Image 1 (cartoon, one colour):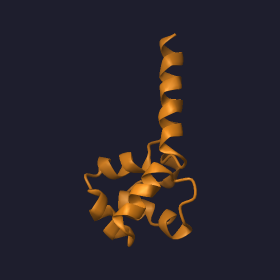
Image 2 (cartoon, one colour):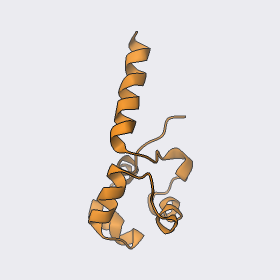
Image 3 (spheres, one colour):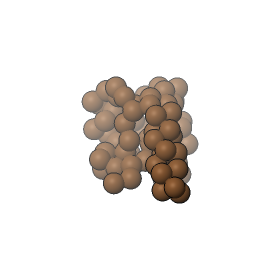
Image 4 (cartoon, helix red, strand yellow):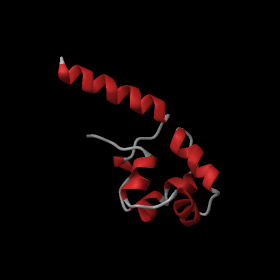
Length: 81
């Protein structure tokens, strides 16, 4: 199953960083940090994701965005070979 990042989930519904952060009840810089590395997001944030983004958490990648991008590139290169 292909998962998407927190940033992609936010962008898919057309919300700005500030708008989404407001709905989560956090500062937009905090949300930006979560989008960069969602390894240890607090439970209070985690349980609001479906309500704010309209998608189950199992479709969202939790971890470092750089790791996600590297894995995606690796997967694409394997498919091309």
